[in-house]
Structures are given as C-alpha cells and as structure tokens.
Length: 176
Image (cartoon, rainbow, N blue to C red):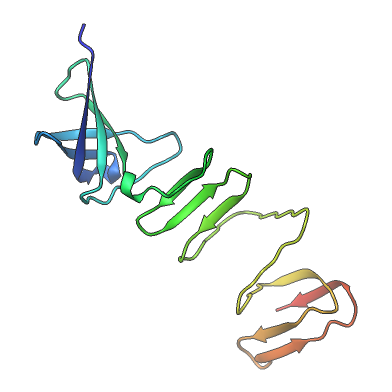
C-alpha cells in the first residue's frame, strides 16, 4: 500500500469557479485538474500571482487524483494568539474574531445586507457616525433632547431639507 505524497507549488490558473487549478510544483512539474479544498462554509476564486501557494496531496501515489489546499502567507494579517481572520486580504477587507471576544470588520468598500428582518440588540449603546444616515419608509426612533436631526424629502411638492426639533425625550415617529 502506497502512502501520500505532499508537494508544494504555485497556482498558475484556476477553473470551474476556483474549485480546480493548474499548479506548478517547486520542482517545475505542472499538474492539471487539482481539486482545491477549502474549510466547510468557505469558498474562494484565487487570483493567480506569485504568492498563490498550494499544498498538494497525492492520495495513494495517484498522478490524477490530487487535492490542494491553497494558502497565501505573505497576505495573512498579523493576529494575536487565538484570533481568527477571514477576508480578501489582497484588498484589505477582513473580518477578525479578536481574542477579547470582539468581532472587527475592516473594509473601504460598502457592506451590503439583504435580510428578511434585522434585529440588533446592544447591552450598551449603538453609535452611528456618518455624514448622512438614510432612513427609508416609516421609522420609530427613541431620541434624546440633545439629538440633532434633519429630514430630507428628495422629490415631490414637499421636496427639501427640514430640521427636526426634539421637544422631549422618548418615542418619536419619523415619516420620510
């Protein structure tokens, strides 16, 4: 019974949505149709460059049944002990599960969510900091008297920007 060969190489091209690859081993051998393996629930379509490394596993000495686990050490973020990060490190977008329990999301891009319902519960406070916050349809807000707010109506006979004066703290109904 033969064992398992373990080789290291570079991904030179991918196909089938990033599930198959052509790999050149460090010794120059080109291997086609390598099945790329990712942890359950993760997927990637790797950008081919000089740092797209892969560990190859040739099961039972097979020349055609070869699996690869891609990795990219130069792009991996610096992590503290017990931290886990996933993302597009080449673009700088990542989600890091910090060792203190925090979840850190870092991106210069938009974050788009499409959900049936979204519930956010904070035991402390929720802080929104942006030059503009857009609220759609009817929204219930609990505002304090120090809050500053404007309502923008983009079109129609009532189009314009209107200041909202908070008369008293408590529930306030805002209709956009």
